[in-house]
Length: 140
Image (cartoon, rainbow, N blue to C red; front, side, top):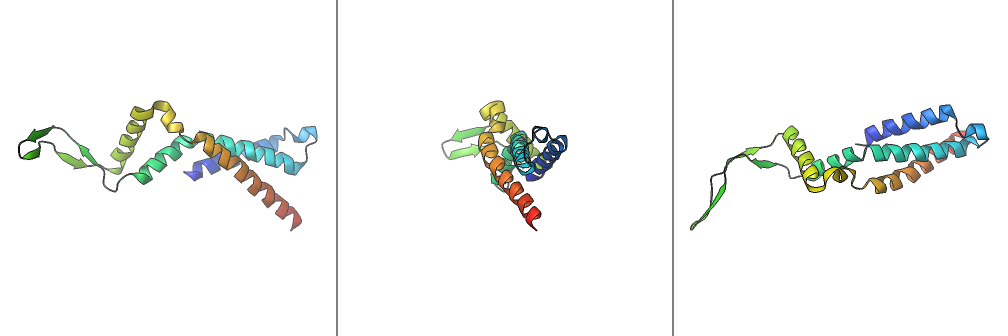
């Protein structure tokens, strides 16, 4: 889930560095790179949030998901008698069920759960990392 974010982040950052919007205003290169890194990391984190939500749900599901196929549960004097047939879900079916569950429970907003936190985490983290890396490259 971090691979798509990384691809988007570095692609956007390199595009902004090549366009050098702030460089034309006389902003120092290291500061310019920091601003571009923060913007691109934030946007990449925001855009890939639905994949992160889906990935988190997949990782936290039970090992073997079982789906009720058809039938109904019947209560009798002896307890619960089942007329239900069960089938083990394939990984593909499991992902589809998770998407349906998110949509049913929270709608479109459910896919963007935690988006603000991801942006608040990745923007400063990637900025500090990149500026520190560039400063060390310059020194050594």
